[in-house]
Image 1 (tube, helix red, strand yellow):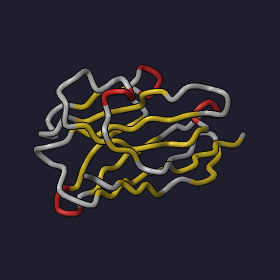
Image 2: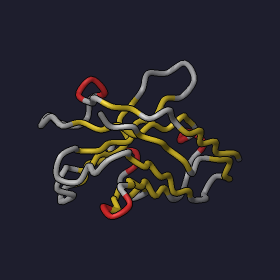
Image 3: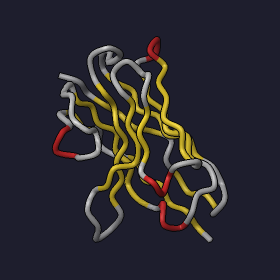
Length: 124
């Protein structure tokens, strides 16, 4: 079992930056791949970014490439998502998730554990 708690969401103007955090209840490095997903009102949950259990490989949705960086602090059992040049369409609830599978990491069904989400609102 892994409990995940996100933080760092908020209201930001378009073009601004936010860093989301996800703290796990136990060590995830070496065991769990970690991902970030988001869900806007009326839309399905979509993949944003993921990092392999080794921390060596990162994956991003095309719309976030060059604007987002996923990273982890193993000593703090914390996952981060740094987002820059935020756009109105980035507004959503952002969730972190963990999987001990070896899938593609792009699909929410692959993940075993989820946080409660943190709201990101980008204003014009």
